[in-house]
Length: 214
Image (cartoon, rainbow, N blue to C red; front, side):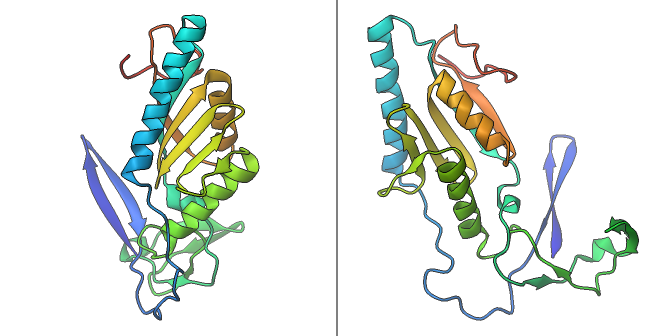
């Protein structure tokens, strides 16, 4: 394991990652994680525009339609490891004191750790994260996963649609349903979102800045 540091303005963002080495060749399909097609990306925003125009024709206002763009913070770490994996901690932890099960422990890079979360750098992390997200969206949020493009989730009756690319999200639909989906996702995921309103009178996503353009 090691730390990766990246400058963000005047601050430094640090992330702990690992090198997935000394493992046997994975079985076929073990590492598979689907990637959304460009056609699905275009279709999502095309449908959003059509739904917006339909709403304008029906009631003369787009105030009930909203699109949310956002991402999941530290996405992979939400997923659990599905097997016993042990890693060597980075040298930087030497001498650091932490509390584990009520006891103070001094860390040492010579003592291996048992990996519990899908960290960046672990080859199965994308697949584990995708399976974790799919379970939340289908079982908790109750959206249907597309059989054609598994990065797309929808509810045709409630008219809400979620498009996912790794940890980036595009959620579109009626305000009430978008709020419902976001609330359920935020109970188990770190969702960072930016509202992209389609008109000036959209002020119905509570607690989040109205950024973007008409």
